[in-house]
Amino acid sequence: MAKVFVSFALRKYTGGNGQVNVPGATLGELIDNLEAAYPGISGHLLQDGRLKPGLAAVCGHAATRQGLLQKLEEDTEVHFVPAVSGGQGRPHLLAL
Image (cartoon, rainbow, N blue to C red; front, side, top):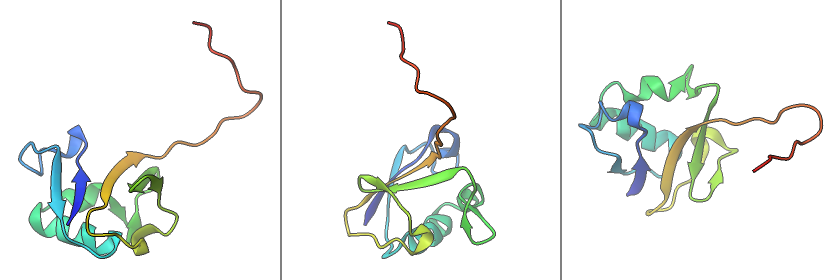
């Protein structure tokens, strides 16, 4: 089973659990099984049958580019995180 890390905002669906084990051969199956076990949670992950805009799924060590078709290994770690995009202009150095 994949290990799904649950953000603080979604823990109300998992009884406060920060991680849950969920079966699924693909990310889509995992989300279907997550919804079956924790009703209401998929509404925060999906929109029109795909990941919500602004949400990324990190499966293992990389963000998926295959969406819900992403294949999962038995022990894959899955994180749903806000997507981060680049800005414009030159990079700025941080002053410490």
